Image (cartoon, rainbow, N blue to C red; front, top):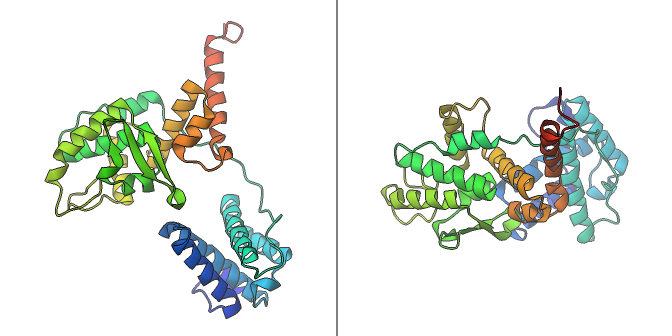
Length: 311
């Protein structure tokens, strides 16, 4: 068993493996402006791969063959890593090798064609329209609940990612036009519509926002101390609000995003519009919602079609 499989501290790596990883991570942070979370994930995955390769006697990335990567995937599988996790780690390797190829440090990408264990594609769990109403129609009792309602209305109205919500500044809002400017993955900017209910909730929050403000904080959503409301705090407040509303399922900002996409697609069937709203670079990412749309259609059919009704 190689050292990475035993766990414990990460061993020191040959410079021929470590150096290019450092350069790649620097490129992600400085040139592609990837988020710290993305850079950290690449660092973890690539150092894990480098540790495995070092245990196999590999000293430079140019010595890597597809067989090395397949053995790495098998080792991860034996350690109980899920197919989704293994697929993500192989994707990180493909991206890294692709960069090395572009930098003319490699003659070929050894990760092309290497696949992990097959995985079942699970559909995102949506939230029923009635449950969303129970969450959002609660009458706020104080300024914090006004802020929370604005947060959740905006997340559901515009399908924002958690990081996008937390990163919003007050100047990003144009409530007269009913839109918000969002900085998504890779620093890409998109303008997203904001629904009528969300606009009302945001106006109510903006009226009381100065009572939270200390100094010149630009963030749209503020915490008790006057600073930007963080992602963890948003998750915690949503879970708390869901329990208060009597919902029997845990809610996360990601599920509000799914609910927005699913309900829009069920109503409009316009996949391209949903893709643009969510900020998906590839429509194949959005197409998972077509499965949910079919489930909804099947339920309506079973309930309404005269040849489908149970007698």
